[in-house]
Length: 299
Length: 279
Image (cartoon, rainbow over all chains, first blue to last red; front, side, top):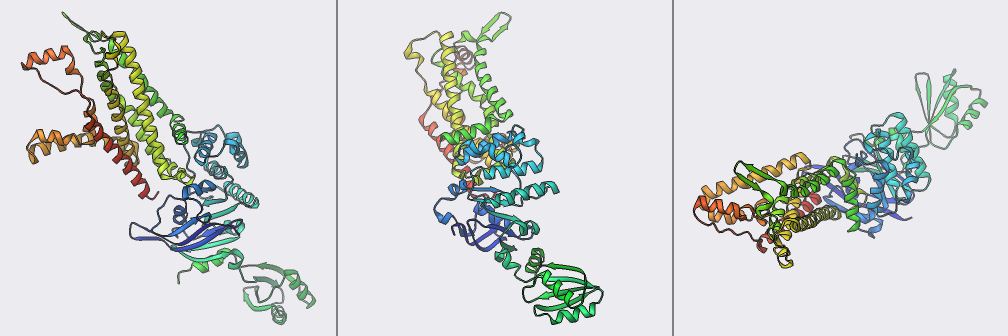
């Protein structure tokens, strides 16, 4: 698989005191959707700032496209939005996008197409300063997509948006991901990452805690949440099942942890055949949030 | 290069305030022609400026470039704000992310400065030519096109001054503060001149020579004030002081060189700051 970005042992120390990024290394491969997770102040934006040529690294290295291009040329093949949308407030949406075309050295042909994609075509002649935050953010996405980039980098794209805005941006990201664009999404909103990303990098205090596939992070088989009138019998029957590892009873609910794969319908059938009728059956996996909190817990 | 200029001019001309200032600048420049119509009337003493010889070739080159030098402040505001706005809008960051290199960014601003200086120079050249042909007592080709080095001086004076503005815009990041800084720097040069001349060197002749190397002083040295060159004023001065003061009005290569060095320093420092700063 083609490598888009390689980061090796990257360090950033602000003002000789704040060590914002510590020895971070990871690789971005073409076609995957990556999430960078981390609490506020964990070095997500700084890391992105460094590879995007706006923050100077202290040590370490990064390479775009295996080092075949200098950074600013490589960035012409990248689409990126950092924190808040930055455009010229006195220019219209269309004019702002045309300026980006001039910078990237590409023809204007994609301007309308991308405005339509983000649903701003009717507002193309409105000045940027008249836009709502959601519209500004969508314009930023249109601008990042102008060159049909090899990779789209989004830093907290839903920050400060209302629920509709968040939904619109999220749908847009899913749409773009489904078209095969590589995406790097930095966020502290975990369900956001869980919903769209295939790979994650977890940072805390500037250090990499985990990097790999999302599924790898959620590696356990999951657990069941059950309820029945006869809890004692239920427990007894469950203990006989080969896939069950552990059973816990909390209030009136029974939590069943698994060591092997077991589907909900199989379990239901097994219990029914053993004379137990369930009132409640849910199969759950540890959410990314729980995994993340466990991972970033200060030891 | 064309790409960089196109980028910069879109940023400037879509901005209503900048456009207004640029247009005002050129309109005001052409108002120099209106000086021709000024007539003072002190009772018995009638005084018509156009008849005092200010529009005579080649003196007009000196006079017009000197007067036009004052209007550069309009473009200074445009230049300071075109730089500072990139910081306030956060667009500098976005430009870099979109794939403009830091070098290209500074170059695009510098090219704009050069364009402004060039257009102003050509504008003054054409206007002086027209004014001169209308009012000058001498219109022989050799006289008309002598002393054109004032235009060269004007060109470098503008580039130097605008580069200073550019540098202040990057350094201070806020237009109003950068312009304030420019004013403070102007006073600062005079204060240093006064204190060093009086207390440290105790020698104003030497101090005069040193101050020729100060940035703003070196720019203003390029074109010296032209008024005392006029016969009417010269006569008054000779009457009052009782002696004929000899002054040097010429444009000197060494002075242009000093301004070029400052231009280089300002542009390089701008680039240096941009490279070092985390955005």
